[in-house]
Image (cartoon, rainbow, N blue to C red; front, side, top):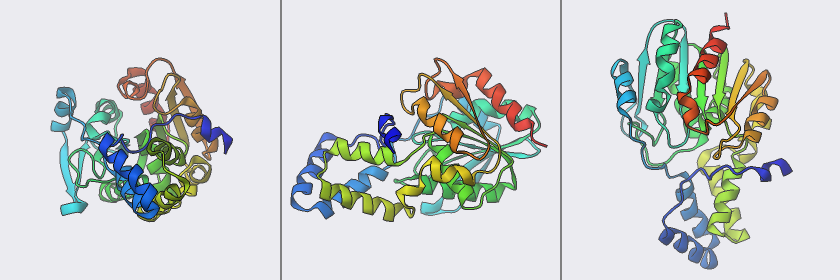
Length: 289
């Protein structure tokens, strides 16, 4: 897995305050197990909720708002248009509003579009999140929306949909924008950032897998890719500083029917607002019978 070390994907959790980092480092010298427990909560803590722009709010206002579940299980989703269903899936630190540039073009192409806020994000409930939690939410939204014709997933949303596909969620076509290839990179980066000694790092890894309910060895494109049997279009920017192009290349290569399109100068987030990227995504989804 030497190629994994060359990536510079940011840790799944935003940097904790320096005081918390110091506390974990001190605990690691006294009790590696306790340090692993505290570090696990930091690792899965959802980032600050992303504000929505005026443009995003205007598109969301045109939708039918849906609430799935209650209390800690509450998911909020939005639905536009009529026709075959296309599900939009944001990534870590994102929200449904981030995906709204795709809504009107997809509706104009004859699709029903459904977008949601993942657990711990936007208007959905929760303080913690993970790829398996994202995948579970995708399954719930898809079940409430009807059979999927397609999905457009950004960043970690792509890894989450691949996991959902491995669990049985089907689609005719999928578009991933800036997808990561291996969740283990985030954990390794987090361990380095906290400067955890080996015993505490092992305790953290064990607790992460227990909390997520999935072994880390399954949260990578080599294992997940073959489970996504639908044609996949991966769009990745060469200047993406959060998820390097090498990850998109791996995701496309490991998928059963993957194809890669490389963009220039759009980065990790602005790529979602690019008209040419939207055009290619819509045309790819519309090409399925």
